[in-house]
Length: 326
Image 1: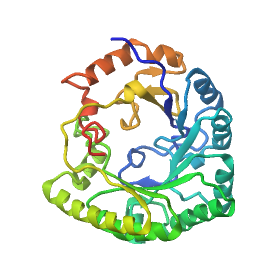
Image 2 (image 1 turned 180 degrees about the vertical axis):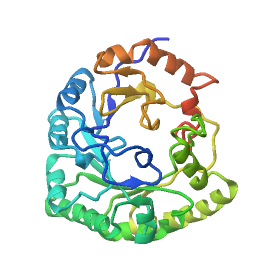
Image 3 (image 1 turned 90 degrees about the horizontal axis):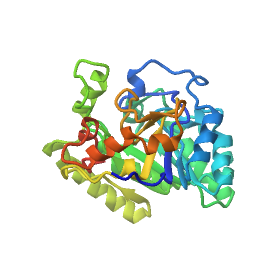
Image 4 (image 1 turned 90 degrees about the vertical axis):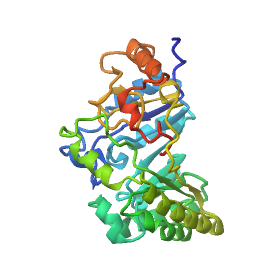
């Protein structure tokens, strides 16, 4: 199998440290990571963007990007190379000063996670966060764009739909339209973790997913009704909306290992951002090899071959993106 050209899209985990313990995130089920120890080294980041002809750069992973002390210079590096750049944030650290700096930086997009329309629901999911603070910070970001007459960053709220929060979507759409958010993206939980040991290190997040995923017929019926109402509100307010599919299409046609790559803060290269956990699949280490050597190497070649077959890697089979339900 001939390997594809180097990718134009990279997703880089610029920090593995986070200030929250969200119920659906692997960070909750692992020991805390120090802010400095978890940050990707600037020299590794510069080497990576020097080696890869990247045109789109996503600066996020399991950690909170606003905790990285190197975030401003990483954005500046991308903007200086005419690379589209953005990231996802939990929004807790997005104060007025940071909002204005990000608008002025040339950042293309900023996605903020907001999984409820009330403090009780949101704060039960995003442990350690304040609903009022995050909503205020979102409104402040939209205000900073208006004050600076900037079309960017595009502001998207990301809502992870689960049994405990999906009913809040219509009210959230109304709220976001009022404060000037551009888009609401609804997504399912990313993985069922069925490839992991039921009694092993992924036991807790595997059990959480089984209890919250909208993958049963009864859950799907409720979610569809909620999505329909949310779409009506979005259309009437001008809020852009994307909701996920709820029917498993059977899997396949994932192009991540041909089009893009995910790099952890430690420099480990993984096939995509959906894996969660660098002990599940690693295709190379940038501390030992160049990106090109990894991309064209036997591990990547074998992974692509298997993914393109009727017997994909175990880690892919429970992935919502692979199943077309993300």
